[in-house]
Image 1 (cartoon, one colour):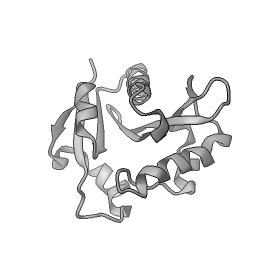
Image 2 (cartoon, helix red, strand yellow):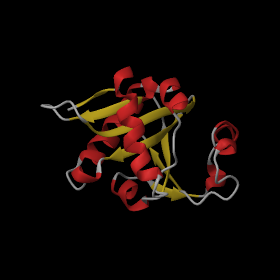
Image 3 (cartoon, helix red, strand yellow):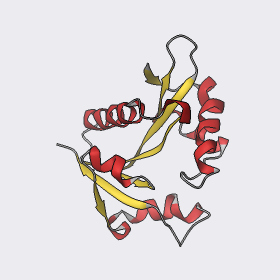
Image 4 (cartoon, helix red, strand yellow):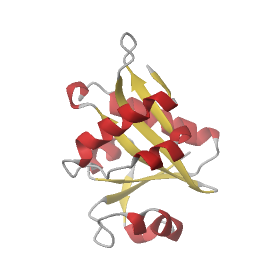
Amino acid sequence: MIRKAKIQDIKAIHSLLQIYSSKGELLPRPFSKLYDHLRDFIVYADEKSGEIIGCCALQFCWEDLAEIRSLAVHPDYLRKNIGTLLAETVLTEAKTYDIKRVFSLTYKPAFFEKLGFVQVDKAELPLIKIWSDCMLCVKFPNCDEIAMIKEIV
């Protein structure tokens, strides 16, 4: 079941993101940022237990641009289309806000290619992204993520 995240979900979202950030596959997010951006998140919760199995955030960057962030699925539930469902849900949400382009910085470009994203040079991303998030990243200025973007029709 996909739904908007609730305040009670933050610890589970943090734990899920930590699984991948500890392996260097996703950038870590501190609790403070997760609480700040709660409204950006959706979760995939098990219908019976309520356990958070996956999460994804859509963060608005500019009047026509948004970013998919913190897309993660618990390793026990991989290859069950949950990541795709989460990404498609936030892409649909982007359309409701008249967002024209959605980007992601990722270590899994093949996943995003299946959703219609294309690889772009990071220099094509707006400077606001660099100054708001990238400057705070432990990997800045040696970013090894791949920039992907999708035009929303």
